[in-house]
Length: 204
Image (cartoon, rainbow, N blue to C red):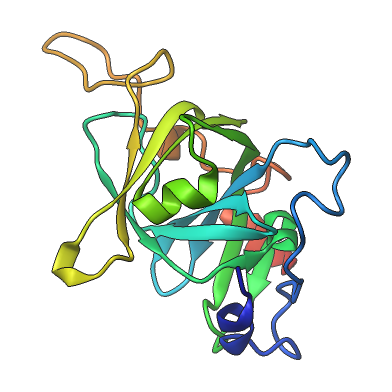
């Protein structure tokens, strides 16, 4: 995994994003057997979207999810693979200056650890185009799958889908009550409890 593309896009004399470095395994974290982390950033750039990041081989493998995650297994959310990010990015919450790449407010919307389902290791599953994980976050829990598609002949387009389990939310039937959209029900930071407006006002 390389951070060359991540660094090429950013001017670290202007942006407060971490420059970071690729690390071997879980280096720098408590215990060599620590479970890999995941984070979902809520990012108000040119348009509001969410970024899913999974710790893998010393970096954060990253997908931009335009509509954000859904707890409804019927919703197949587009997830576009983007450049790898440094592990320190999992702790980043603040404002990227206007005019810089991705300029706008960034929130740690959810965070936790994950485990891979199946016999393959995470990088091998990504290479094969199907990664099944169990998320143990503050908001997102249970089984999820990332499946690569060949939309427009490109391999960077994936689908992010909730598996049918106890944490899933189906659409309400006639006369039933909706359990709600988690993006609307829990809009604030899982780390600081701040809203996007509060983060933008603080600037960090």
